[in-house]
Amino acid sequence: MRKIVVVEGKHDYQKIKQIAPDIAVITTNGCDVSTELLKRINKLSEENEVFLLLDPDPAGERIREKIAAKCKNIRHVFVRKDDAISKDGRKIGVEHANLRVLQEILSDLWNDCHDGPITDLALYELGLIGGSGSREKRIKLCERLKIGYANGKQLARRLNLYGISLEQVREILCSET
Image (tube, rainbow, N blue to C red):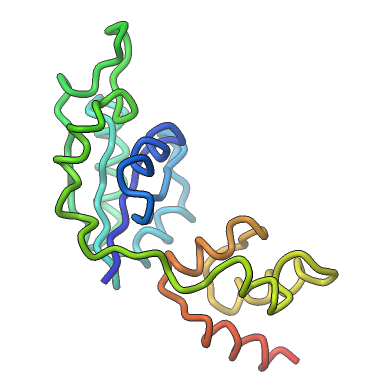
């Protein structure tokens, strides 16, 4: 079972990756959580541990409530408001938390997390990135897997996030030809 952390934005994402580069992280891209993202998080929560680490402010709470209302098996992780204040004291967010504080909060999450087995090289060798017709192959693969379209830079991460094996990818590609 993989562990996945949901955060609000790219700066939160970068902060988590500084601490735990191997942990899977999804961003909501702010308050407007799309229906597609909710479906994706819900699907991931069926076979993975999904943790919400959102800003300790009203917007973060609204996002937390929206995701929790639509998704099963969600676990909540919190950073204290006092630990998430920017240096100038005007902003609040996970991105402003001290690395040590975030390490303590997340310490039990990544003990057994590893990157997925699919690499960009493997995808290149399968013709899914970097070649003529790669985009069309990716579209068909993503449709068959029902994971939403992923461009060449996103595909390995998305496949690993969903726990899809290289063997499954090969089988789908073989059945398409």
